[in-house]
Amino acid sequence: MTLQTNVGEITVEEKDIVIFKRGLPGFELLRKFAVIALEDTKPIQWLVSLEDKEVSLPVIDPWLVRTDYHLNIPKNLVDYLGITNEDKIFILTVVRIPDPKPEAMTINLAAPIIINLDNNQAIQYIPEKSEYSIRHFLKEELERSKKLAQKKDGDD
Amino acid sequence: MLILNRKGEEEIYIETPEGRITLKVMGIDGKSVKLGIDAPKAFPIYREELYRQVNMENKESVIKKESLGRLSDLFGNMDDKK
Image 1 (spheres, rainbow over the protein chains, first blue to last red):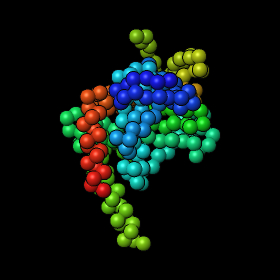
Image 2 (image 1 turned 90 degrees about the vertical axis):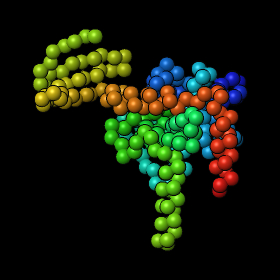
Image 3 (image 1 turned 30 degrees about the vertical axis):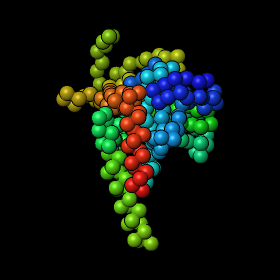
Image 4 (image 1 turned 90 degrees about the horizontal axis):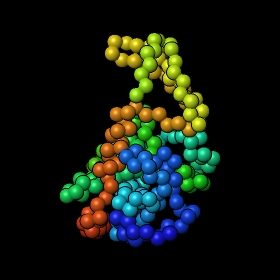
C-alpha cells in the first residue's frame, strides 16, 4: 500500500507491517505501523502509523547512541511477542526532537520498542525498573560513547 | 468505577477473555498498599505514573509535517562534522 504521511509518501508491503497488539502508549488505538528509513534523516528512522497519517515517531538504534546499551527482555515479554529466535529481535528507541530546538533532541532509552521480526509483533517495553531515563540527550550520549571508544583504544 | 473493600491477604479476580487476573492485598503499611498481581503471561502490567510518562513522551515525539524539512538540515550538518 502507498500512503501519505507526515514524513512523505511511503509504500509498505504487507510483510513489513509491524503490529502493536495493544497499541503504543499514547496511541493505544493504533495497531499497524511500519519502520521507514529516510535518506535525509539517517540514522534516524520513522515509526509510521498506517492508520493515522499524522502519527510518525522518530526512532533510532540505541546502540548507535549508547554503544554499551543493554536490555533484558523478561520471559513474559518473550512469550507475549512469541520470540523463538533471539537473532530476530529488533530494538529501536523513540527520539524526541524539540521544535524549535531540534539540536536538544533526546532519546528514550528506558522504554525501548521491541519487534519480533519472525512475526512482526511489537511492543514498547516499559520496565518496572531501568537504569536508563526516558530523556537522554543525544549530544551527551554521543560524547560519552566516543570517550568510551577512546578509553577502549587506550586499553588495547 | 467499581469500588470493593479488601483486607490484607484478600483477593479480587478479574476474568478476561485471555484468562484470570488476580489482585491480592499483600500488606498495608501506613498510606501504602502492597499489591500482588497474577496475570496471564501476555498481560503487561504497569504502574500508572510510569506508563503516563512514556505516553506523554511518545505524544511529544510525534513529528509535525513542517518540522521535517528543518531536520534534514540538522542531519546534513551532523554528516559534515564527521
